Amino acid sequence: MKVLIVHAHPEPQSFTTSMLHRAVSTLEAQGHAVTVSDLYAMQWNPVASAADFGVRKNPDYLVYALEQRENVAAHAIAPDIAAELDKLAECDLLILSFPLFWCSVPAIMKGWIDRVLVSGKVYGGVRFYDRGGMRGKRALLAYTCGGRDYMFGADGVHGEMDLMLRHVLRGTLGYAGFDVLPSFVGYHVPYIGDAERAAVLERYDAYLAQLDGLAPMAFPTLDDFDGDMRPRERAPQEVAQD
Amino acid sequence: MKVLIVHAHPEPQSFTTSMLHRAVSTLEAQGHAVTVSDLYAMQWNPVASAADFGVRKNPDYLVYALEQRENVAAHAIAPDIAAELDKLAECDLLILSFPLFWCSVPAIMKGWIDRVLVSGKVYGGVRFYDRGGMRGKRALLAYTCGGRDYMFGADGVHGEMDLMLRHVLRGTLGYAGFDVLPSFVGYHVPYIGDAERAAVLERYDAYLAQLDGLAPMAFPTLDDFDGDMRPRERAPQEVAQD
Image (tube, rainbow over all chains, first blue to last red; front, top):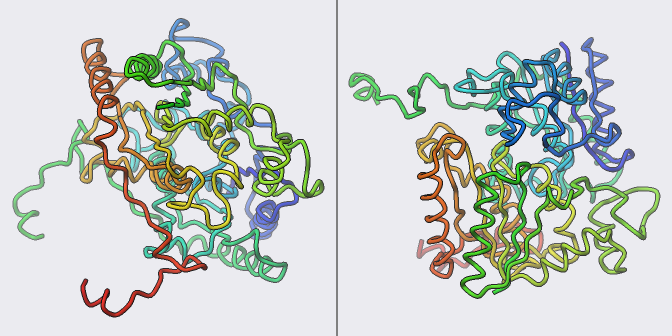
């Protein structure tokens, strides 16, 4: 299996970065080939702009998604984006590795999503969810946060974590066509000691060892929607069976 | 009322930017004072890093939130962040104005959130939700998207839009203590003509004219949780009344 880990943390000695290193060694020991895009180390530019395009379909008015399509087709997209697109095309599994910032990915990683998940290749027209461009690939989130696990349960003060991350899990990875595996979360990280951190890494190892046993999250199938993306009328016998 | 509009769009002629201009003129005509932070025009740096701090509590290991607290107290936070913090402190209403990128804000705006909503002022310890630092201020999202409104209903292909944006509405603005008003959304924008766009701007005017009539979204009160943020046991008579 080819694995691409996109990682973002402003502190190279962070526990989240230890998780990255553990993932690399564990996955390589399993015989997988691992590529890492360490966004802070790469000084990744997160800002989607006209500078991303070598050619322009419309030089006077920027529609970012249209120019993505144009520039991917013309091999004229910015070299930093092109390099990530090559890694993405190669991979069987994408891991986003990050500390939770405001119930989402850090801005530098949001900018990887904004710039690399290009229209025309990753999605476009009615190519999303089970018709998305990343069909056949798997993806997962591996992240750390300050809160405790019970704060993100159904009765927790913040509600379910997967609802907080719905924009990434469903709105981004699911939309792009990935099979999205349940996330790995390291809770309460800033407040725990070495022994507890070692236990999180052990748990991460165990998680990475049984990825094939994880059922992907359920997202809609476009078969249930018509060409205008309205829910299809079901045949009366189907309704009667409900 | 003092209004801060934080705006991000890579095309200065975009419809989303027309919405910004309309908001400024409509709110000023109502007698409000409006300040705009146009992040693309400002070439806002979205990347949270050690460079944001003039002093360091721990120069060898970066814990971003801890250094935010330290540097706000020492008046040593980066000048671009300090300027935004002043605008934020002044405002009664914060408007985030943007095109939806991957069911969230563009990276440049995520970087405003990551860097400006500092620990120690906006939140910190048990200062969140109804005890958050932004208590007494209101906030709203005004955004455009490519999809049609019915795609983001409860039965729509993407489910409810407010669930996709829960990380911003609840996880960011609600968490920080703002009263979060229902969002204004311009749907299907890349595909509609001038007359329809004019109608969206009219609808935006009407929305901005009746903000006082909008009930804020409901988020948890910390009164319902104990010091460890576990749900409080309720007295038996309260339970009996359920």
